[in-house]
Image (cartoon, rainbow, N blue to C red; front, side, top):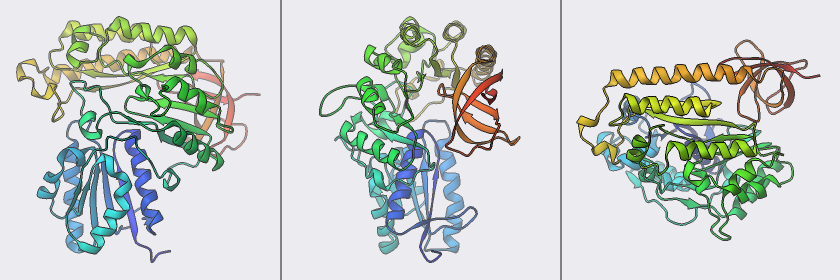
Length: 441
């Protein structure tokens, strides 16, 4: 075993990137490579990058500087850069870090094994950035999963929405839906291998349209949920524009479809939403989550927000706080605005910029409000029972799991539990960011 060439894939970013990293690992292992152990030097190092947040490129070049020094000591080391920074920076990476062997864009993950072999044999720079336009096809049986019971399954790649702040359409291309028949085959194969929870992925997952039959996410959820042996089904990430009755009906159908909806709002100000090119108003957004809750009162809804978007004033920010109070999210992810290259908002003048100090203060206020609301929401769950999927243990040695509504539960268990087990638990205390629980009788 030790004689096999080794690899390491270092992944940053979203669930799509995590799955891409697993796909690359599988491709390499099929060609006879083995994963390098913790702290071990690898023969092949791949930086699987994310470009969504500010200073992403600086993080990549810092890591490449370290790898460049390693390559001076070991000229046979193969270094590759993949993911969204690779797609954006392209040949600039090879110019600034000439010790990099290849740069692979987001649409070419299936080529990773071929490029690594080529780099080891020929030692010449390779740049592969073409973005496909056809329905994606995966070698899904060759994915090396990071878990033995939870799996991501991509159903749609890319994004065609072109929000003014977002780089995804430029890093992952336009929307391309996978054939449902292939999705069902992949999920079925995962269940046969012992996976009990599957999350369907897409940058805008509810823009999904089956290339052959034309149905959307709602029908895809219903058909996937019927696959024998699948215990829990999730989906990420939805866009408010594409929340329709079919999707809501599928979400409310019960069974193994998890009662959880991640629906980024980004702002509560109609003026800011217009500048973001989100194509809905705050009233539209609240209407959509209202419809979801009318169909499924216990649904947990989380969201994303950008604070300090160009031109945002205090009145706009107050509108965001008002929306958060009205929506009562189970969780939210909030970030200060950072301009991303190639996006429309990055070209706007500095006169629209929100000072860093103001943006930081607003972010703190938003997070404080959400913490207060989460504490109230989680306390309301005390005494309720949930089925928790065990994911591991926490720092105090308690069982750590996740409820169907995607809340973390720290469980005082009556019996030892291993990752992948399901436990029936009773919530004993609601904390701001998690739940305390004990196994139910």
